[in-house]
Amino acid sequence: MSDYLDSLRSHYDHVGTSESVNIPEPRYCQHCNADLLGDPIPVELREEYYGGWTHYKREIGYYSMEHDRTMYYLCPDCGETI
Ligand SMILES: [Zn+2]
Image (tube, rainbow, N blue to C red; front, side, top):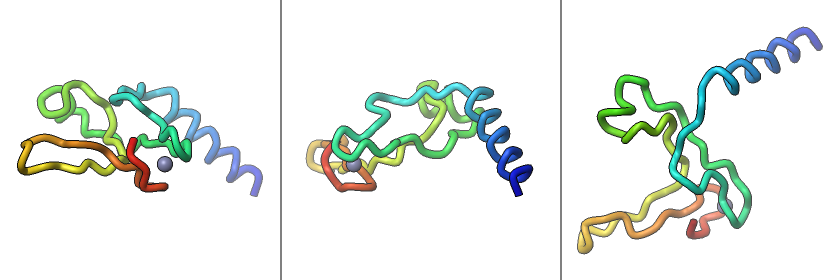
């Protein structure tokens, strides 16, 4: 059992150190402190489509057709504006 947990832990340590995280600020919700780090973006798409960011973010963008841009972002956990 503890061997299993140790192997899990070392797995996450490995993931945590082997891949750098490069996402737009802020990384954490300032209201509930949720980690907004999402899934990794496939390496081949990062430079071409995502400006070099390494991970998606979990925030929810509110896009305005009228202004043709994202107006604000919401935290997926607490629903507050980030
Ligand atoms: Zn939040």
